[in-house]
Image: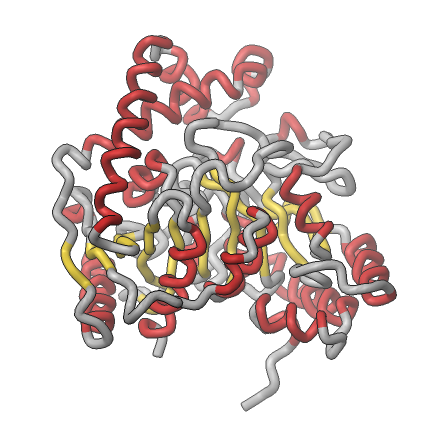
Length: 430
């Protein structure tokens, strides 16, 4: 078996080699840049790339002390995050020449932990549905998902070991599923959002992508400041109690998702008798429309400058969303927020019987075509509830594109979710 190239190693194992000085950050960055040079013309994962600056960062890290958990690791940063040394365009031509004066808090934290920012990855227009040029690395005729398109594609194609993303509806879990990588969406509020273009304060969450659960746990520990996330071992007695939750949207899951569900449940029940069907909460299906209403109201107001001053430069589908959001009055939104808060309390009771919930990530494989980014149907409810979730890739569908499922955890128990996800993923990939 051929020795893997440095850019092909998972982030967690590479971090150990870098910390021990067994490899150089400069050599790792060079390997990643070589992969970008080889594949970027086909994948279009990056909005901006600065090889010279990345190499300078790497050489400085090699010459100094080990900085932190991400020492020497190249990362991609979704072009929704402000960066001082690279343009930040938010996926819109309106901001083509925008140069922020400060890094987003999360970017600054990653740099403090020793990360090397390789470049800015493509996002859809203001992280909504108008796609950028990114293609799926497994088949360039298919979408990589959105809105964190470039981040998921860059990690999947071995251009970087880690990348930052955001989710308001399904923008981490869906592209992770379509591109076949691990995506981690923390509990709402666990990661500071300063310096990231805000769309919906009630829903926006910052997370990221890796090629293993340990990878995203490493990144999550830096973003949250909680090192328990990186322990990533199920320390409870026995196996995690896994609730099998197809959700009311299950009839819209295609044959591939149904097959993957059967594969996973059979594999897990062979290892533990702690897998049980979840009793469906009454009216849970209403959360899909509730998420849409909350997002639509808040996006229309968050993007007020763009809506009022640059309407003609926005895509038709974004304009339609903004108009719909402005048609929702404040009293209705207040009632929607109260319903959201009530549901967040109500859903917590599920975790008295289950440590985590296994549930679909997507309706199926990545759809063909680059004109859309796929439907976030199976992610909307969890985004509304603010619960942490992890997509686990472990199979392929009829078109040989990646497939998997997501695990959802109790609010605030991200470390427990990641430990359970590591346990589950090991058994699904054996």
